[in-house]
Length: 78
Length: 358
Image (tube, rainbow over all chains, first blue to last red; front, top):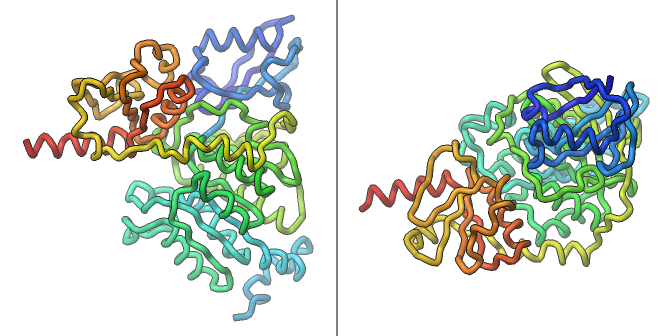
């Protein structure tokens, strides 16, 4: 199970703050593409963290079952 | 007034002591934005004895600010936040020098302003201004204490600390939109908690104690009290110096904003287009003979439906999204575009007034 955490405006779209997906052998890029399609995130900017470390979205990374992915959009309120 | 009595409870901390208190007295901190975050940051910096505090904010206090901007009184509605917060801080601690700067932070004044301070606190509510602060901090080599809130969640980080990672390393996609408190809603404790975390980072940097949130994004949720720190690295491909800063912000200097009242007489003109970039369900609904509605998120897909020969006046609810739309159009070589100051709210008031007159 890969855990995905959502924050801010991204969580508004996904309507949950986290979910677990049963995927093995999926790359980070594919997972992001799936999520962007499923939740129509294309208009939102966000950074991506794997296991608490922010990495470029285009990073060639094969997700492992214990990984935690986080979608972090910038906030603007103050 | 005896400073050692005033600061006794913090001076007995081994991390502070007399030396630390001297460091605080010598420190100069600029807080940009005296709204919800600023209302939390400012009194704690002043109370702790930060020697010089600058407050940059061009807004006046509105009644709807008071549920979160707790340093203001109801009687101060209509007055400048920079001036009112200065009075509040001076009453709290007369040993502190407070500078009120009641002007809008922009590319033309940021650099000279930042040069007078050691630490810059971003307590603003706009992504565009956050990028501007970040870039000006890079040019002047100052650390930037970032704080931001979305409803019940907040983010805190420190950028450009000892040449560390910056806002652009964390969020490289500049031309995006995120709702601020006016659009998304917020409770006072959210901005209060995040503002206090920012004040904590400022004090740690001055006192050179603890671990500064450099290269780390702290995310806090009020709803479940969860907090996480995310590490991020410096992207050395991003370089901002005074030359590239000037180049980048030249457009802004040309002032692409326009007051709504100056263009009311152009509503029926054929070569003019009013572009509403709000979502269709946003009120007040504004329809004019030559207006068109394209939500900001759709704009890039719909560009071909816009005539680049026309003068285009863009508006949204408050004037934030229209600025982003403006940037998109300028990049696509639309030449005659302006963003309407104050957005639909101001425009609607003027239209109503005009209707009443005719």
